Amino acid sequence: MNSYASIDEAAVDLVYHAPFYAHILAGLRRRSGPTSTLLAEGAKVLLAICPTDLAKRSKPEARGLLKHELLHVLLGHPVRRSSFPDTKRFDLAADLVVNALLDDDERTPDDLLPRDFGDLNLPLSGTVEDYYRLLPPTPADEEDPKNAPETAFVTAAPPQPGRRSHDDWTTFDEGTALEKMLREAYIAAVTEEAYSRATRAGNASSKLLRALQLALARKAAADWRTVLRRFRASAETTRIRSTIQRPSRRFGTVPGTRIQRLCRLVVCIDTSGSLSAEDLGIIDAELRHLARTDAQIHLIFCDAAVVGEGPFRGALPTQVPGGGGTLFDPALLAAEKVDPDGIVYFTDGWVSAVHTRPKAPVLWILTPAGRALDDDARALLPGRIVKMQ
Image (cartoon, rainbow, N blue to C red):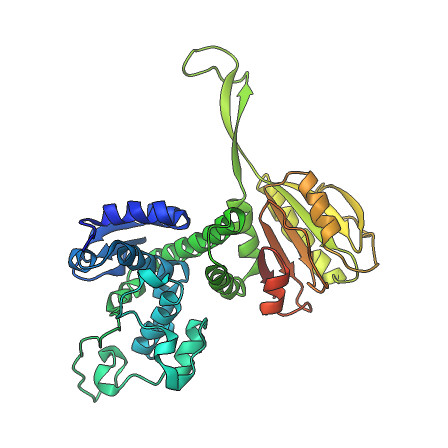
């Protein structure tokens, strides 16, 4: 069999065939281990690959092994495991989600798919919650001992064929509160960056994009302000400019150069009646916070057409123009002319169609009274979506 002898060799091949995974691999420490799994060490997430497991696989299957673990990272499965009472059932549900995202030649016969549970009628592209709800409970003799009643004595059973053991994911529940927070923040940032890169480069399948959207929507529901601030940070760009205040380190001459970090945001505000006075007050406060981080904010007010635009000068105008119908394309086209690093659109989300696909990443922030974060909204609005709570 034509296989790989080392993790690094398999990782290089994966990056060559699937560049989408390059930045995820770059942020993970890798090592050999007795099993192929993910581990938490301090604030870091570590990828362990079993050399024996790698050697017995074909090259496509080796790529599938790496992709399997990286997809668990992207979808946040290791940090979510402990919130499900039946962890073994969660493990199987998570694997069904991930295995369905692999190519046919990247799976081994032991990699279970939803169709392998024909009597349960599992959806072909379900979520962890879908599969966890539909799968039968784990038998008592296979349960995790820490979840068993105190009076019971449970002997751990080896995983059944086709079922991977994710017992090492318990390390994600260990460590200090700061280490846990940093691990969760890292996984959230990796997911956001992966989705942003995929939408711009078009190097991910529609099934994977949908899975990432659902993962981001779940995380975003907690605090839209945090999502907005992370979006601002991810949109930041680095530029080199000349300065007479500092000589060149290389030549000792003036002018020298200085690295400048900039973030040019376009903030579109739906003025068709979507936003209440209370909503506008909350938005104004958050824009003031972003302005204090040196973000350059350009405002665009739009109902069925652009009714006003200009730089944010510390506060929203007391009277917001507009009040007509709703179209998002005029504002997005106007935003493209500014060449922003990111676009933020405040709206209730109700519109019949959106035809413009901006080059810059877009964050849609829906009002509390706006449309639900459902599949229709995700299919309609090009970019990341979060709802104000």
